[in-house]
Length: 415
Length: 218
Image 1 (spheres, each protein chain N blue to C red):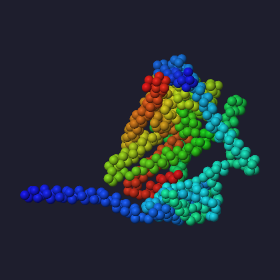
Image 2 (image 1 turned 60 degrees about the vertical axis):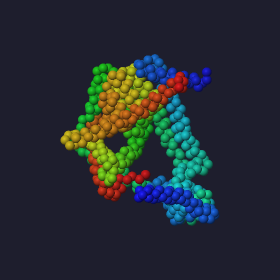
Image 3 (image 1 turned 30 degrees about the horizontal axis):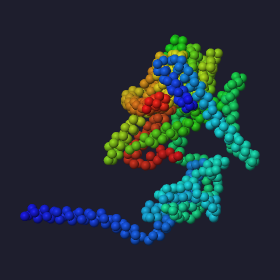
Image 4 (image 1 turned 30 degrees about the vertical axis):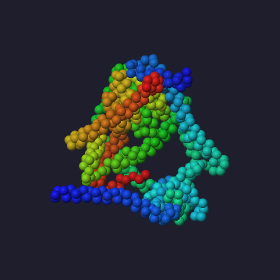
């Protein structure tokens, strides 16, 4: 009997709960509906509250063609049926004049940079040192309200970008290190530099070409003359060309860029002159192939197979062509020395060439080959620069761990 | 036969010509190579003329002249004359007696860009990297982030030690440099695999051209 009554009470409880759930599920929308219908119809037609406290000021750390506008968000931003969708920023040359739309900011944002072109011929030219007045319009669905007009502001350029102070400090620090060690090296102090296999192989590679009576192929990469890797390669080319001039070994330099070709010609000419053999310089050996990447590869590969150079140098900026060149050189039986600062290509050079200069080793190579005080001093200065970076890194990691924000701000570069 | 079809056949012929290099150097490859190099060099000349020479130099000088004549004032576009002048000096290389004047242009290009790149590189490859590597070594509640941050900081630190050229890699210093090399090699290995996969997509594109567009096999 007791069991039966228990079962009955459970069934009643379950039915009660079910009914409650049903009531709730039907009741909630009803309640919402009631709430909706309770609101007067004309409320939706009301505009949102206007933004207030509109301020305009010259954008700091720029070239003087921009004004930054800030405001306090509309009271209807973020909630309610008059919810703000966006803010429109308007500008005029006089407070009573006609205002033109300069741009928009999404809801929740209270800053806008009114930026224009610096060229007078541009339709969007932003004149510096001219007063402008701003107002901000809060827009909801089809309705808007405007702020009062801001005080005048004018744009002007700054000579010094305060956000880039860390760069200035780094330049000064790095330059000081280099200058100090160049002076030390010039005074005759011997500066130690550790051996690099790729550099030590240069002489051996040139000697091999001389013995075999075959040319040397020097590839400057696909970079333009303004790239650091290409500039480093020019300096190494000067050293290599001087040696080829002394050994009277021909050097072939197919180029991808006309300017690079011209610089390479001048570099090799100067090297032959320095070696006392200007008569052996052949300008036609430094030639332009094409600027198109894979057409250039096709041309260089053809040269490798037909001229059979004893040594191939790949030093500079390389992209997808690195493995194609290095593989063909390997097939042609050449000894190969490569070097690039293009991280994605280093693995291919490591896999397919005999010696590889990794990243900064390429920049250091010229100092190794020349052993001149200026270059050795710079190398030592660079090492000190790296030591400074390592100290900053460790201190920074500790500061980040213990939340010393002040220290972290020292490294923040603002664009 | 439509011109499009002729283009497809020429494309397929030249693709196979370049691929024939995999066997050995042959006349078929030599022809394709010479055509590829020649056409691309000509194409780049046209691109340079229309995208650089005309809009960057001629248009700006015309604009400068227009401003001068219509408004009677000197416009900053005249600065492009300097670039044009340096370009003319480069062309003097064609005349051996005055060819040495082109060195002024070369000196300008290499010197100014090296100076400009110095600060740019220091910012992007130096300070920004340091900024990105300054990470908390302990992140409460996230073991993964903690381990990841420690790996980044230690890897960068040891990698920098490897690139020390003026100190012998011996003892603890040498040990740290070896750890740096390991980090570099693991990175290169990962990059190798990643890049090979992207090259495969290039090959697939060519195969697709041959089998689908040319032969219409699928």
